[in-house]
Amino acid sequence: MKFNEIMHLSFYTDQMDEMRDFYENKLGLKAKIIMRYEAYKGKKNRGAWSKRAETNPKDIAYIFIELAPGQYLELFPKADHQLDHETPDTRLGYSHFALMVDDIHEAREELVKVGIEIDIEPNKGQSETWQMWIHDPDGNKFEIMQYTDKSLQHHGNIEEDQRKYGK
Image 1 (cartoon, rainbow, N blue to C red):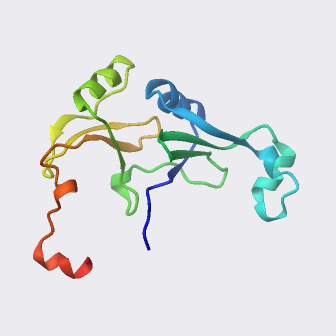
Image 2 (image 1 turned 90 degrees about the vertical axis):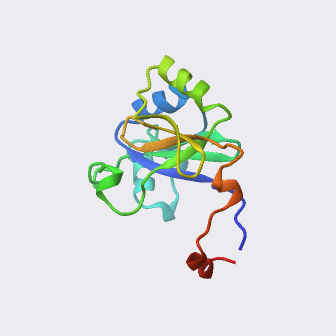
């Protein structure tokens, strides 16, 4: 099987307005799809969404924000039964995502200019790739990264005992 790219990642949020402000206004990304519950009116296979179509048809069901061509962040409003957000370092599973830029130092200046706090300043990681860390209003951490000529993501660096897992 060959995958072409990551199509989207998704988060539930109880701060939809703040999340949209962060991703759309501060990061300059654009919403590509804003789906309202009314689109699920009469759909029998959509459970709670069909019910919301009757009770709150104009509420947002989800939003797709384009991170890069054909790659999206999907935001869902928090459902009543969902537990509060935990920080990524307190659970297994999701940790963070990363976005690539051409110039990490220029990106840092743009982020600071719009009031985004830099959690970890630009630095070269062990993989010889520039990295900087920020977080969104829900506390989802992510990296801003820039490849270098020596980036191991391009050149590879697999220990001999790991070769049994790859081709």
